[in-house]
Amino acid sequence: MKDKRLKKRFGYLKSLIFPLILYVIFAMISLFSGKQGTYFSSYTTEKIFQESVLATLVGIAIAVPLKGGRWDFATGTISVLGGIIGLNLTIRLQAPLIVGIIFTVFFSVLLALLEGLLYIVLRVPNMIVSLGVVMIYEAMTNILFDGKGVNVFNNTPEYTAELLQLYEAPWCYVLLVLVILLSSFLLYYTRFGADNKSLGLNSRLAINAGVKEKKNILLTYVFIGVLLGFAAILNASKGKVEASSNLSSTSLMFSSMGPVLVGLFLEQYSTLPFGVFVGALGFNIITYGLQALNIDSSIQTIITGIAIVLIMAYTTNQERLKNLFCNMFTRKKKEA
Image (tube, rainbow, N blue to C red; front, top):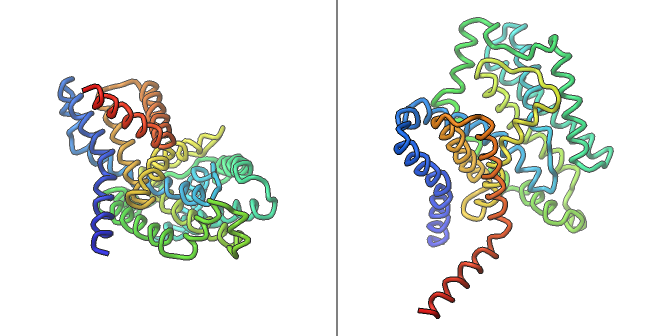
């Protein structure tokens, strides 16, 4: 039992190697290029961690249904629309911030549940349903509240100051820790997590074994709705949320895909939620490292895309790569 605990703790430390290596690489490049002042600034470090919190929340919301065998494109638009409805109502009612948080989480859960119900009723592939939901919800962001999105500066100075503080330390980090702990508990220590995993591995076998698929799907959407509600609050605490169009809301989902892939791989060493956070940390180190080096935004996107492809290639060909290196090592040993 003690050995198992030590192995698990070592696994968490092992997971942190990914962002640590990236940080060292960009630190060396910054030193040699004379840009160390920008890269090592407290602003850059703070932004890396802050953006990682938002990416972790959205990433876990993607990873949980993915573990259950369902790919969802609507996470970004649910977060955007939930934030626009919840915070605009709060501003118009001149209600306190806590009411705004409750409204935003409530509407995000409601929007997520509607998507889950559509999937259950129509029995159309989840990917198709989520794409349709993205289009509908994006259109709603342009119709509701005159398509102006939400601007937190339209409220009282006290309310605005309170909301902006949520993106700062320690509140965003408290939220991060709570989300990782709660998500890990739900995925690994509850019937919900076990059923979700079973459905992802073999849905027909799981249903025959007594897993209630519809119940698990609805619970999944409630859970991701809560996550996306808090993600909407964090997103709005930057100051403004714009209405979405032409599938622009999917950018929030795609920007979290890298962390999700890293999280799925690192799950063997730690937990999926912690792995997603580590992945978010790594990809934000890449983003802000490239910004510190004044790399063009288009080149940044290309480099990030290459990183995602390489990570995917490594995770899917891990055994082949191990065998390849083992064979090379054995061959060199024989030749010596």
